[in-house]
Amino acid sequence: MAYAKIGVEARSGLLATDRAKVMAIRIAIIVVMLALWEGASHSGLFFKDVIPSIATLAAALVRLLSGSPFYANLLVTAGEIAAAMAIGSVFGIAVGLLLGANPFLARTYEPYIYYFGPTPKIIFFSVLIMLYGVGPGSKIAMGAISCFFPIALSTLAGMREINPVLIRVGKSFSARPRHMVFKILMPAMRVPMITGIRLGLGVAIIGTLLAETKLSNKGLGYMVIQSYNRFDMPTMYALIIVVVSIAVLLNVLIERWSRSNSSDNLGSLA
Amino acid sequence: MKVAASMNRIDVNEVSKPEPDPVLVVERVSMKFNLGEQSVTAVDDVSFSVRPGEVFTVIGPSGCGKSTLFNIIGGLLGHYEGEVRIDGSKIAGSHESIGMVFQEESTFPWRNVIDNVAFPLELKGMGKSERLDRARHFIDMVGLSGFERHMPAQLSGGMRQRVAIARTLAYEPRILLMDEPFAALDEQTKLLLGEKVMEIQQRLKQTTLLITHNLSEAVQLSDRILIMTYRPGRVKRILDIKLDRPRTADVVGSEAFGRYVAEIWADLREEATRGMSDAESARR
Image (cartoon, rainbow over all chains, first blue to last red; front, side, top):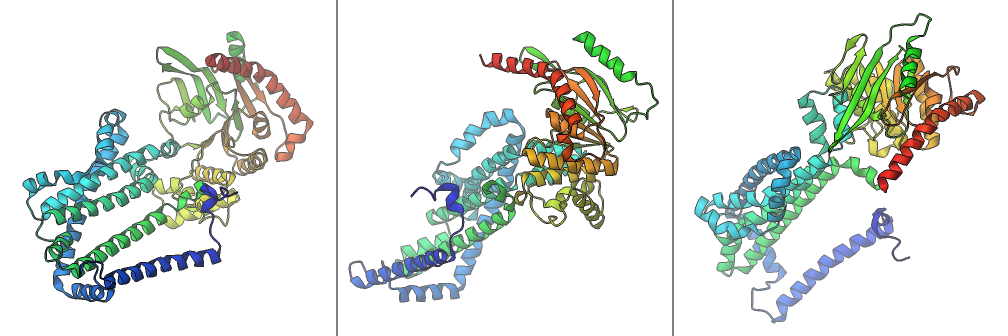
């Protein structure tokens, strides 16, 4: 009986009382974490400032958000990620479409993309610095290499997911090639492509920030590592809080967007 | 076999009373596929013609080349021998006179019902308000009024197939070409949807070419039935179905209906048996 609510069964909605309980537990987790943190900071078990008190953190956060350096660096990082996504998406989608349309090319190149995709790209960072310098160039390259792989693989998967009967429907209505592409092929693969862009954005953010913390002269990652070097822990924590919040917010937005685009998948659950 | 097939062809052409020119003529169509070193003849020297306003059905066992024939007539398969003519002129590739309904799930899952039905009109470049009006008309015809804004995933399989049929009707083809359109549906839905399609067919005087392996579906819907042989697919016989119109789903209970089904089954049994023993020996 304990197994009755696993899998598809578990997807059925919760009761309103259960939903309230879930919310209460989620809030309780945050409260408990904050309490533990505050307790640890006053316990004297850690060096001063390794775990600053919540009041110190809040002050640092306010200071950070009211100063202009933060916004200048945020803009740099956001620009790097946007450029990385643009470059990675263009190449990723092009390669995915090409391999999806040509089984021979897919047979030949897919293993490389598939197995090289999950390897840590940060190892190439030193090479990228030599090629593109210490500034944003090497960060953009890092992010672009990171997001290229999931986007290429998802586009390829999307091409394979297109239901062939829909192509026959298009042909039976004498659809012209541009109608075929924009009214049938593209919409038919938008769900895996959105997934690819979501995964791609995730790794682009990781790649860019990681590169900034390694060696850079601008950006949020640079600010984090600078405050660490100054042993300015409150500011460092404030930066971590801000970066994590931005990443969570972005994920929520993309999740919303992808869900509104895949409403047709209701049927697979019913 | 060969003699019987060619005699049947004479039968078809020998009808003495004057009749209107056929809308669709399939003449001596053959199709071979190369499977590795073997070449398999899927359709062999098939000829028939479809008169305006009639429901003409091609029935045969699995593997008789029905779907190949469907794809050839619909223009989705090239490189065949023989000719397909519409109103006397030979066609190649997909043709605007032919509207196809597929056996598989074929609605666009990202479009709601009305945008699905309006799809062929959108391709023709018709303005938005006009094409939505037209689409509404055909949605009403298949009995889906009120579901215009539903997504396909929110509908049942039978409703989705009605959307697909409305979409093809909105294309206003001279010939409605359907390949096992009810194959994915349960028996009751199949009968009722068949009745609906026939009601529309009578209303529009829609020339219809139906491909099926289902005996009772064929008799319920057709004016004439072409029985195909199993591999290679040849014309075995063409049979007139003289049941009254309009026909409802209740026709399946009548005595005449039973006689037709039995008669076709007598012909099909031999072919289906050959198909079955082929399939069994392929597994050995």
